[in-house]
Image 1: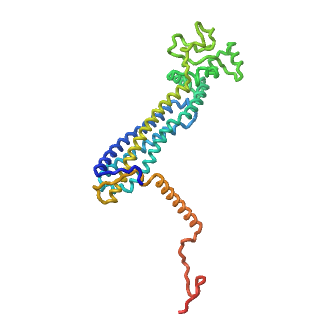
Image 2 (image 1 turned 90 degrees about the horizontal axis):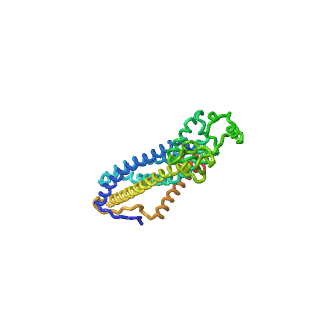
Image 3 (image 1 turned 30 degrees about the vertical axis):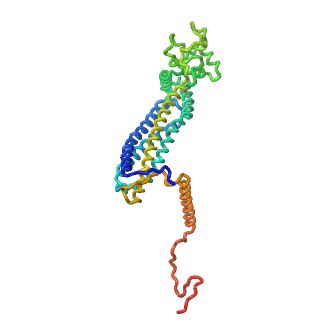
Length: 364
C-alpha cells in the first residue's frame, strides 16, 4: 500500500510544477545563505584563533560552505526539471533522471540536518579549545619580544576590554602567572628579589592584574595592584568591592558569544532544512504522479502520487533483498575469478587420431 497517496488532476500537476519551480529558485537563495553563514562562522573563528588551542573547529563552517554550494547546484537543476515537468511531453527527457535526483536530494537534505546538529554540538570542543588557548595566551602575555608572541599582549588586552572580562575563569587567574616581563622589573629592589626567590620556579607572582581588567564603570580609579590587601588603599574593602574589576572570565564571555552565534546559525539551518524537505516532498509527488500518467497513456487523466509506492516495511525489505542479491553476485564473480579457465572456449583440434576422453569413434 502506497504511503501518503494523493490524487492529482492535470491542473493540480501543472500548478505543483510551477510552485516547485519557484521554490527551487528560492532554494538557490537559501543555498547562498548557507554559504554565507559558514563563511561568517569561519571568519569569526579565525579572528581569535590565537586564543584557541589547536583544535579542528573549522569542520562545521566548512560543511556549511560546501552544503551551500551544493544546494545552489541541486536546486538550480531542480528548477529546470520542475519547469519542464509542467509539460508531460518534456517530462520524458527527465524521466530516468528524476529518481536519482530525488535520492541525491534526500541525502543532501540529510546533510543539512547534520550541519544544524553540528552547530549545537560544537560547544564542548569550543569550550576546551578556549580553556587551553586562553591559558597559553595569558602565560605568554609578557613575551612581547619573542617572535610569534609579540602581539599576544595586545590581543588579550583588546579581548578583555571588548568582552568586559578578566582572566580565563576570573581575575584571580592572573595571580598564578607572571604577566610582567623581567625586563621591566627592578632587580635592585629588595621586594622584587624577595618575591622572585620566594617562588619555587623563580616567577614574579603578585595579586595584580593588567589594566585591561579594570571596569570602566567603576567610580574610583582602578585598583589593579595589591587587590587582596584592603589596608593598602583608602576606603577600599576587598570582599565588597564589585565595580573595580571585571568579574566574568574571558572563557565564559567568549563561549557565550560563540554559542549565541552557533545557536542562531543552527536555528537558521534547521529552518532551511524544513524548507528543503518540503520542496523534496513536492518533487517526489510530482515525479510519481507524472510516471503514473505515462503508464495510463492519457496526459489529461487523473493520477496518483505518493512518497513511497509500498509501506516502509516492504520498502526496507525490498531494498535489503536488492543489497543481498548484489552481495551474492559479488561472491559468484569472486569465485569465477579463482578459476582462470572457466568460461574460456576450447581451442583444441580433435581428429581421427586425437579424440577427446571417453569418446568412441563411430564406424561410417
